[in-house]
Image (cartoon, rainbow, N blue to C red):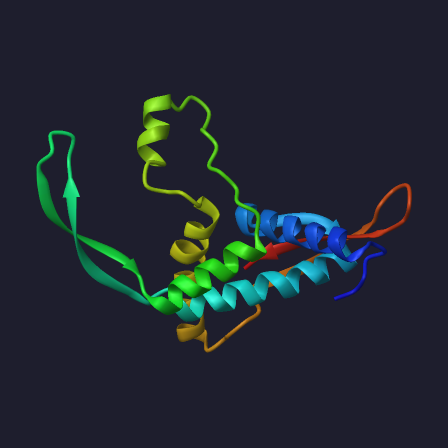
Length: 167
């Protein structure tokens, strides 16, 4: 990774923030050097998620409701490999919380996000990982989850601007 003319802690925070935004929004606009640094980080995280997203197991838990009645409930939990990958990915990204949509009532928002503690991590494991795994199985293409499109120089300092996208 290039140094990007920053101290180590600031450079790592910058790349972490850009990688978080890329995985949340699907594309970002930045300079060429920053995009190359983010591309490396994002593709490694996606590869880790793809390799482990199917590692789950069913567990029976005892659930106690408001009235004190206990009941057995089957729950799907992460296996050890997926849990380790989830924690590693969480360490490399910032935690983004879900935002209430326009004209969405508070009750609808609470119901939609009730079981989701880390929306970005869930998006990576539930949307991106199956999508890219299917792509790898159908086309035989592993990796290459992002692309960089040139936008031209930025006015002011003439820095080369690019758009980095998830495919």
